Amino acid sequence: MVASLINRGKIDLIKGLNIFICCSNNPVLCQERNKVMKKDFKPDNESESTRPRSSQPQDIASVIRRFVSDFEMASKLQKYSIFNHWEEIVGDGIGSRTKPEKISRDILYISVTNSTWANELSMMSGQLLGKINCYIGTEAIKGLRFKVK
Image 1: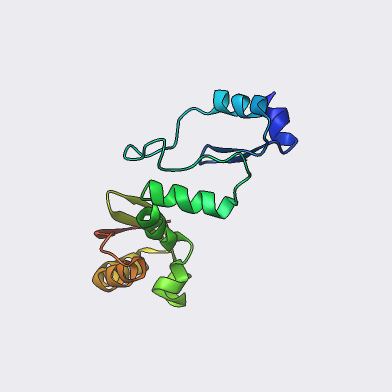
Image 2: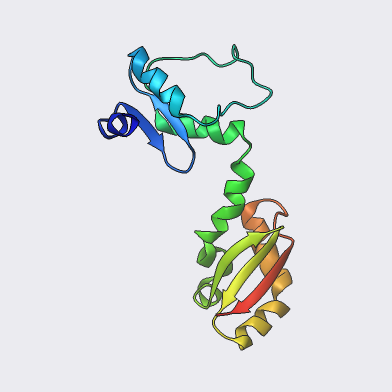
């Protein structure tokens, strides 16, 4: 039943965030939504009375903004934005020969086209770290690791 409600636009789902928004004043639809939700996305420090509940549809941008601020995700989103802005951060020359792969324990893993570039970039890692952290706005990345792909 929930899948049919989603397909008919009665319940909106943001994939990956597990946020359901009741778009109806019909209590049956809202009850169905509550059965599907696995977790109440409410921070521990927020009581039931601090945020007014509304049966009216909400603007998705405001819902996402509130979700990001409630769960302090802004710094994580900024940190991972380097994947989308890599060439802008490191420049076209380096950006065309490298690709950020993952961040693990504040180490950025970068694939490079050949061992010569890996060696050159490892000698420039201080400068690259400076550019990356300047873009992020904080010292979020502590080290770089290069791998030839």
